[in-house]
Image (cartoon, rainbow, N blue to C red; front, side, top):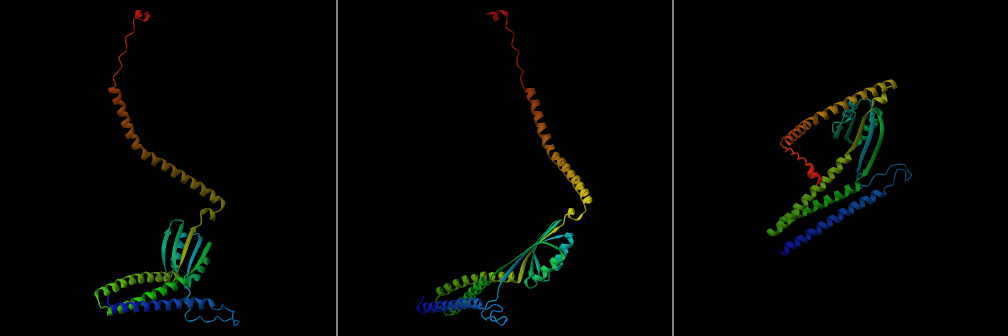
Length: 283
């Protein structure tokens, strides 16, 4: 690399470093100013003070878990689907005859209204709401993205002034690395935006059992009926097991019987020993 190229590279590095330092200073200043903002009523006027222009917007991710008991599981599922707005969706669904689980993405600006509607419609059993403040992480990623873009612009300007092919290869290699890094950082910011703008709501819906809704006499009849059905299921299972075992029993029985017959047929009988004479016995 020529002396001129080296000088340009050093100058570009200095410019990039100065830009990064300035951005970091701006981010720290914004966080400091945010911490110094007085709360409502602290200045004695009772008015909310205006935020400084450099104060970053709060980025809060809300997650809600709600459990409900309902009489009609199918009707509740249909109602929950109808409660979602056009730009809201389900990330996950799991439905059975007496149970349904949804992971819904609800706009944060109408999260409270959505929760209130559910609580007014169904019998809520459990409720949990958590909030995660990602403002600092979001600000750091934003500063990092700005620094990457500033370095990319500086390298593009250096590319036009490069005198040798080796200089161009070096600059191009660094540009490729920065572009990949920029995509990763931008993806993280997009994920933060999605989680902040659309809260994650986990809904667990259980249908009440018959025993919870029927009087004692009906519950006795229902218990007897369930017992008969369970006995029938047990007998059916037993018959199925026997039917599954019978082919093996026939096969191994036939093989064993054939082996026994062959053993009896080819077994040589022992010759009886001649009785000893009485004289021999006396000796």
